Length: 238
Image 1 (cartoon, one colour):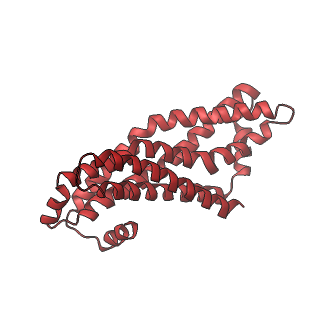
Image 2: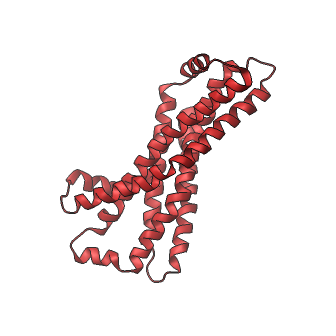
Image 3: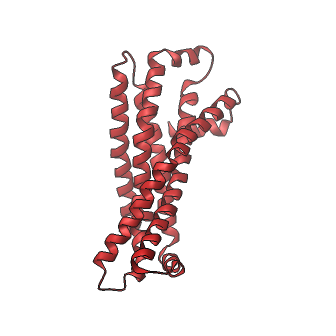
């Protein structure tokens, strides 16, 4: 379905483009914009907790010198993309599967076909791009807020200078770290969108299938997202 979406985008089919763009914007609003507050709170607290625990364990050493490296390892490399994906899965995976499942039961997909509209293009492309764009941007947002929370905690516990902490982070971070974080968020978005749409389209006969599809969308998204995360981590860091 992902390659089909790319093929459809390259062809630039004009029929229904305006509607697809509108649905994509709505998906970005629901998945991305409406998640800003939750992502911000979680990342801020996580960054602070990571630094507080690190300071406690490194109290006998020069903890300030390690704060940037620790935030890079914990937030940017791993928990930033993963926690963002978890939040999106919890909010959007089940919602997408439920929406498409209800459309299938109500024969709306068949109605699209009768009007000459490719239902897969109409359904898949907006969710794929909407969810993927949202996760990539939310991951950047999560990392920035998480690092800021960590710096604030370091300032309060160690009386550290923000400039020193920032310089330590800049010396620790590499292009590979940024690339891997981007690839993880990109992969998570594709995985979540495809699985959610697939589970929704599998609803055929009864409304009782809809909650089952929503549950499968969440569970399978989690499994494949963690598997994908593990593969990238092993490939780039081991």
